[in-house]
Length: 282
Image: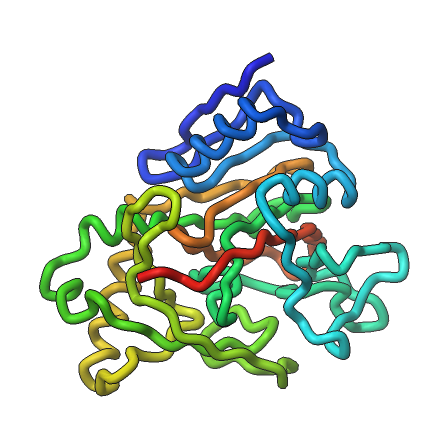
């Protein structure tokens, strides 16, 4: 079978058919897959039915893998999981009252994975093992579409500027640092040029972005919030309703994502893998 691509929304997102993510891609399939990723930003495999080793091998076809960002002393791994340092549990399941993974509960503001690091990760893979009966959906927003339609009076003062970002590990809401004494800071372009497509995308987000370098907060704050509000418009968003066995790969350089709330008495368990990137170009 050959790779086929079915768009999931006007802004971004496509479902992939005709290839098995558990098997290595040949050169033509990998090229076609990367073309689809550049065109659609978020790629979905339904019913992937893969194990941790297969997920790592799939991710490694696209670059060196990142390791879990949470410090060692903050990890609480489940006794019945043998998770590689290349894989992070995203789960609300608790053992002895402590979450077995990261980002356990509730909704999560829009963000770019690892934007708080000096060298952000370019891609993320998320695989669903357990899902609640409702909610816990992932919202993906196109940074390209947001940039291309950003009003000039908002875009122009921020063009060519750098923003600074701060994140407390495990936080899902702005200013929430409960149980997360470790944190990371970074500086990156407000608008990022994608290395492969040459297109510009919004590269700030509501959860992590704190301000603009060499711009007073009184000026930067309203501009950034205008960018956040604009970037999260429904017409730029694809909402993924998870099924067990779904595998999603997305490009962090030109998209951000968030999560909807879900019942706290229902289990949610995902395996997350990231692909390392490089210093963000302007």
